Image (tube, rainbow, N blue to C red; front, top):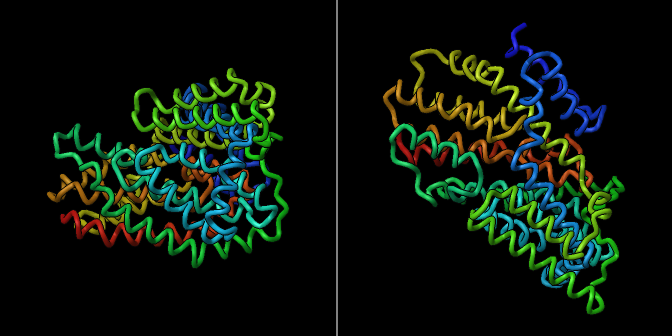
Length: 425
């Protein structure tokens, strides 16, 4: 069996383990990296390359900053403020959170936005004395962060990847806000869907569970009272705002920004090093790093391209441009639920460009559909880092399928409806 076929077989086993959860998701993800290396699919350094990813350091650093907000009591104070604004109603808070997360994610990294919201929602839960449950809100917040990333060029990585493909081909790049033609309808769809379907369904799923939030999310005793506590809370908030400013300016890489924030909250005494180790959400880190290693193995072994070529080749030579668009973006829709949307977009974007040039049609609808479909990944916890980040709220793999599966298909329908109208072939 070739490395490409072996990689696909490993991914098949991983999917079964993800759905059944016979072993923890983090162990499954890391175990897949071990299998890729042991079976000779890719070298060890490639299989575990996800652990050196900028995104993993971004997540880890922001978890530490979020833990400092909780430890100093800052997140609880902010949660109490939002709780008063929302009148204690989860539905009102959901609307505010979706709009805020989507708007911030248009200009900031959607993973960072999700990481910032986690301690705030946890603070609201503490302040509400049981009226607010993080599990009822955080999945929608993660979805909103991903959808908001579709509003601009810099909101998520898939738009940046197709932009690079266009520039390398010497073609006109997309405008900064051009993606909003698709992103804005998807955000509106998300809001309506969350209120009518997602929130009630999530409530029913979480009502039967007793969830202990990760240590990184909960307040560690910082009440925010006393001058020392207020100073530390102010420092933690200031460091978080510094991170936001650096994310927006892109002066340094996002992962470096997050690690700078993590170092600052420790050296300023907002949180101790021992408390940092105790509060770190290691399951999220392992799931994220492992999934990125799987994506690298699929890419380097040729497994992902093998699957893409098979699907595209099965369409035949006389197929219409719209059918090719449906097939390529549909393949992206499926693959990005299983692995990094960055890797999927990078793998399929050159193929989409080549097919459009071969057929003599504009590449813009193909690439726009691919980028926005890959950015709208809601159906699994490994589809995007925001989905992975909120796992600690007590969600299971199947929860994402039940709540996010229909939303993913609806978002795909919006893409297929809007893209050919705005960018004709």
